[in-house]
Amino acid sequence: MYLPPTLTRLIELFSKLPSIGPRTAQRLAFHILMAPQEQAEQLSRAIIEARGRVRFCRTCNNITEDEICGICRDERRDRSIICVVEEPQDLLAIERSGGFKGVYHVLLGAISPLEGIGPDDLKMDGLLARLNGEEIKEVLIATNPNTEGETTSLYITKFLKPRGIRLTRLARGIPVGGDLESTDGATLTTAFEGRREIIIN
Amino acid sequence: MYLPPTLTRLIELFSKLPSIGPRTAQRLAFHILMAPQEQAEQLSRAIIEARGRVRFCRTCNNITEDEICGICRDERRDRSIICVVEEPQDLLAIERSGGFKGVYHVLLGAISPLEGIGPDDLKMDGLLARLNGEEIKEVLIATNPNTEGETTSLYITKFLKPRGIRLTRLARGIPVGGDLESTDGATLTTAFEGRREIIIN
Image 1 (cartoon, one colour):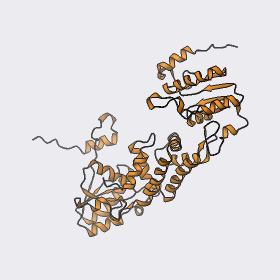
Image 2 (cartoon, helix red, strand yellow):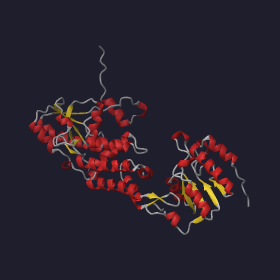
Image 3 (cartoon, chains in turn red, green):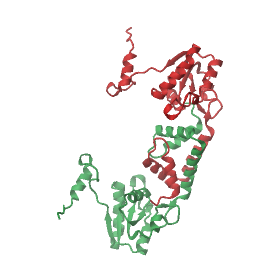
Image 4 (cartoon, helix red, strand yellow):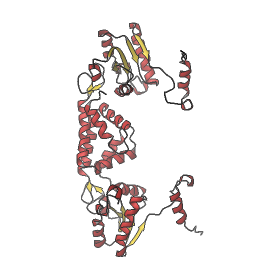
């Protein structure tokens, strides 16, 4: 196909990235070739710098460039409630909503027998240390509402229940702004089961 | 939002790439963070290497790592017919189809008054030099079937007509594998105008 080897290589590496198909990979690679040298250098440098500087918070495993992340360092956050999530991206989505003012614990994974990820692969030690050391009133388990997330949630629940700490999870139901017609059956069933009183005042 | 600055920077640079929205940019950046250091280094290096090594063929402006591209060097190609395209990606699409055995000339652009690209911004000099120096029987203009491509095609036609060379363009019509219902009106009209006799033998 007469493609220059360095271009073929770049297309190949781009197409290994998530949500990048072969066509997009080719478009990206050609863009890099045609872009000013400076732009290619910036992207190349940014990849190395981000990968090199970003690490996991020593307290909660959130991503940070420091030893302790911005949330753990923030004096205004309520340290008595820990929200447990699978990945830093989940934390980011919750922060974007602005609806949670406590602190986090990132497991950096979820139990998945299919992928060979067991309970020992999760960052649970740090969470236990925090429960022993700090004044924690509540652990809110915010794993994903899928098989891996539910399994992980169950594991954490069994692990923490004997400690008598308050364990909660996110509400399930129809999404805000969604419509009944396009809501799947499992979600609808959950929404019926979890129905709430309408309070008239 | 507590995002590490190097991560914010990476997301920003990814989202400047074509067909990458803010969500995909974030997904890509997180993937880089979580990937093995080696994978990030490979991608970073591939970007710099591709941008640094790939240049334009001295004959036809196709991309290559050498002075002359693989197609121009290929003895089996028919040098008497030159297919004129806008970008190296167009050449690649034609090569993928396998339907053309001549050589190319890449303009590296198309006339676009809106974007301030005039005839002088196209790589026409090389084409003229080839017409003067080589035995060319036909110039097939394969610019895109949009306003910029048509304008460019018209310009080349006016320029080359006085030379008495055979000028052709790609056939227009309903796409193979497409259906009439989803074909736009302009294409349908073109297909009617360009209808061909059915030959019964």
